[in-house]
Image 1 (cartoon, rainbow, N blue to C red):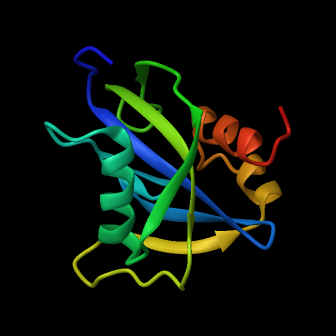
Image 2: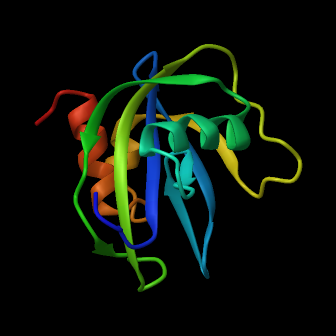
Length: 134
């Protein structure tokens, strides 16, 4: 991708029919999203999602497939441009958030994610694809 704005990588981790959700403040809005974050210079989106998972959850994951790459969007939470990409990831163990991270993670039922106003549309589409609903 050529010079994306605010390039972000997120991972959809499914276990026993549930999805790992990171609940955190994005700007001034409390939101549900998938673990992930900014892609650093010289880093691929795949490398970023693996690094971000370790930083936010302590889990080592591997990328299975790209789920959704919607291009640059305007964040419903910050009103600013961002360019997200979503991956299906796999990993073992239980998530453990380091003390310095201001995020809560929990496995949630997909129906709760689809019904929640805390989840942005690109996240919902990525989950639909991860569950093979599209």
